[in-house]
Length: 392
Image 1 (cartoon, rainbow, N blue to C red):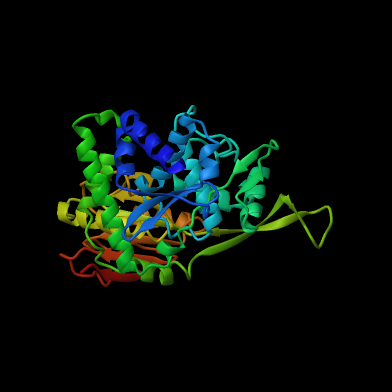
Image 2 (tube, one colour; image 1 turned 90 degrees about the vertical axis):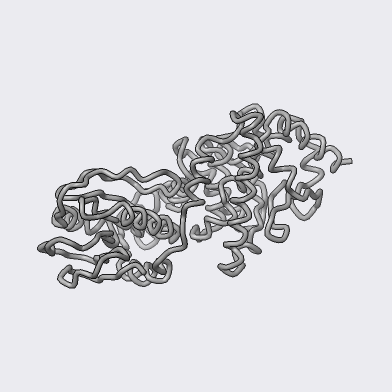
């Protein structure tokens, strides 16, 4: 009976939310006691939906729709394939749920879910940004501490800061995490293909139901080529040796050695400053190549701060692989402004990666770890300070 109820709600979702309903049609559906609430997992290289029958029967029809949208949101946002860099899986699961739940209409959201207000974090951030906040003990309120402790004990419920019962993420994605890189790429491609097919289908009848920005994101993903450099292996060595640890006093944590005194908290920095040479000598093909490599660099899990520079710094911003990169500049070439910026912020950034054709005089006074990345059409400028590689 519960499976029939699930199929009925799936059909209703197809009418109300055609985009999510169409994805749901492609999934194997299973009622099972193996999960406490609901989750999506792999079925070969595609997906299946597993729902606990008792939990399903406890929900209203609207909350059942919200539950399905939530689980499909993990597929739409590539949570199963693009977030292996988030090492603490308990924190990652909470961050993913917070991100998805704020995009579900309040009347459809089942009670007891992980929401931004319960964890005292800002609304409207990305999964990565929520993870960065929650992984820091200084930002973990009582709800977060209760949730992490309960998940560590294998529980799927806990009390939030107001004493209300909160359902915890019940994801079991070890099968995907333990896959070979080649098979993960196959799953990723199948996910992209599924979403493109659904987008094209729904655009004809109800384009307003497609999540904002998804079409553009899929188009950019289709244009991404394999990396020309092994960023994961190299950055692990290069940044790993330059990641800085800072210890500072905090009154949120009491000293174990000195009662009544503030404790010490370690803070790890793995922020990368990436400079893009936007001078006239850098061609559009070079810029396209640089942007493609940036997407793969972002998959290493480090924060990336972009600085665009020709003869002067044109723009600075945090890199988001899901948004287009707008280039400013196209004047002459001078590496010195970026080097000066990096020298002033050595405690903030683990290293500097400079994407350039290398066609300019070497800067003066360079400090810290610097990696110069030259495009495939350019020779390495051996006079530049630091390490140098060429894309090929």
